[in-house]
Image (tube, rainbow, N blue to C red):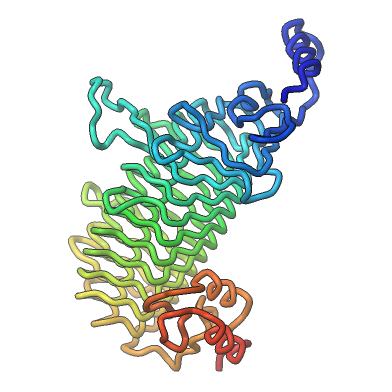
Length: 427
């Protein structure tokens, strides 16, 4: 219920052009006492600098999206992270930013689920075209660059960007900050970018998990049209592409991917983990630093990485136990010439690297990896808390999963025991 006197007084103060207002805290609860019972009503009333706290509950709307942040510099947060749910009910978008939101617009601690992109008449012809559905869970357009923190995107879908789309047809550059988020089970076999589609965008994405997302191109992420995203310390696990790029598809884009793990992703055609292409100019240079690629599978070429007319750089990376028809670790062709420095490729099937590449030194290319430390899931040379976290991410039924140490098809207490036996530095 709205605290009427306070809100009326505030409105009168605005109308009278009184002295600047102190930032306020507004509350939202769908079934209890609060200032508002819907998120959108609170956003509509809020002013720059306000905090909107949302109680546990499931929130939806009758509009095309559950929440439009309206360009306001507000902090929208769940009172208890993971308990306030933005639910699109399988036919509306979750959140829209279209008014140039900046990093001072913050959305934090929400679950965004069951969202589907509503129709947007991209070519203004009045007809619904199959490709006019952008950003199921979240759409940033017109240069909007909010901060998205500690959110879970679960079971969202669209033709472009099942969970999030950054960009639009106007060419404005969106630079959102996405940190400590999880993307689970977003997209479909027809989606481009099962979790995230970057359209000429430059997001910073840090400490995020992309697990079991699906797409036609880019099971988890598709970068398009000169996008320059930065991914740091992210996990890409068990994502699938019906065609190319099980975890990531880079089309004429130059992502910086640093400290990321790409594990058990799969592509129906090429690039079990990553597909890189720039047939127009070959100018895009994806960059991978301190990344681990292991147990990825492609039915075609490039178990871990496939390069077509582009020459990425790999520094301090490992390509281990990936599988493809050709180029188990990496396949490059049509003018591609990737550069490798201090990178390991071993144990891939049927071969390590197929096609041209430049040896910048300190690389280790071998048919078999040295004695495996199977409990070292992140490949850093020791079994530690990071590996324990990866095991719990895989908990339960898990076919051909590296954390299934005893090979029984389930990650459970038996595997946990094996991990503790192997605790510490690998020999």
